[in-house]
Length: 109
Image (tube, one colour):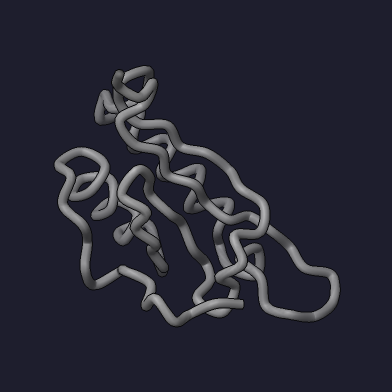
């Protein structure tokens, strides 16, 4: 049985009220919007392909902003739209992990 989507990318858009760092302190919403636009423009959106989703806290705040791609469970940190473009082209389209953007496994909250 195949999955409804080939890949999901979730962007943390959480905003903390207690002064702790959170992904919303960075341009996470803009990155989500850009990714959604790029996926659609590349013809990758829809069943059997890619879904771009918003997420609440993913509990990796220290590496923020973060996104995670499933089913591979690859965690990314990103800086700008060019990083998002690279994730879309390399990973979401071609299945190749963007190693330079991978969040180290020991980065948590």
